[in-house]
Length: 352
Image (cartoon, rainbow, N blue to C red; front, side, top):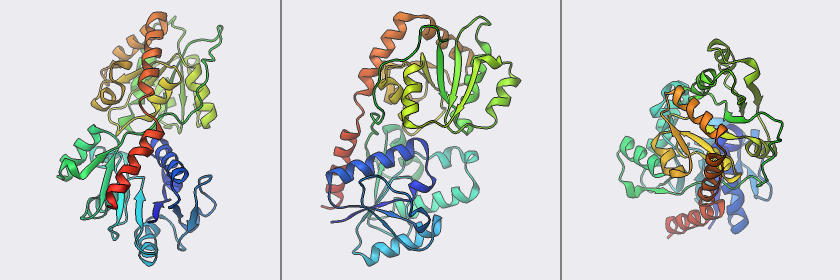
């Protein structure tokens, strides 16, 4: 049996989806001898260390994924295809697709019309068609998928993501440094980062707390911070960081803020917890599912409530220690080894 992985995620995914797809591909290849990563011609220079790969076809993008990839699979014995990044070929049956969430349906404004059409066709005709397997990353996401697409719950498997990709290091906050609240400056209204800036503006004038914004930055954030009166010295616009740098950012932060209005899972708050950083999260169902009692919560549209939580965690050493310990215990439940074990079970059942 050959297990083929749709390698287009290396071209156009980012954030948690890319982390998931890369980690799981590498770990499956480490444990099995039947894994091959299939890449489009314009991704020939890409790959994942120690994962066997093959370049397929002459094109890239949707044309490659919808036509060249399934044609190659049919010519090579119809192996199982794993689509780790939401999109599946319409004209191929023997495949398993990971639907991380149904964001294009719930938040159409965050996606182009062309992508929404591709996602709808791919999901309805490719991912959830007869003979296909569907996996998602949380119970909350399964509920949304089943309700929106009107499929039975037993058609969708749930396998949680891991959160132990980063090297665990001791906290590196120097005594003479101001406390830092770390947040990803992600694009899209559902990421709710503007509420963090509102909370920063609501902090008392004498608060020493600084806000560090990392990742692919939404260009609207910096001008918005100025418009709501956040002092320039309170903000640090860092931008993209490597995994090594990300681990240091988590470790040095006094608190990590996860303000989303909607997620399919949420790897970053668990990564922060694994590194001993307390988490303040929006009070939405997926965060309650994944974080439980290990985080502090705020109503996602209430910047004043977030400001109060930031003050409490920043100023309270006992609360900070309590959250750090609870976070480490919670994050320890989510390992890529367990994710891989459950995926091997899914693959065995799919090929039974």
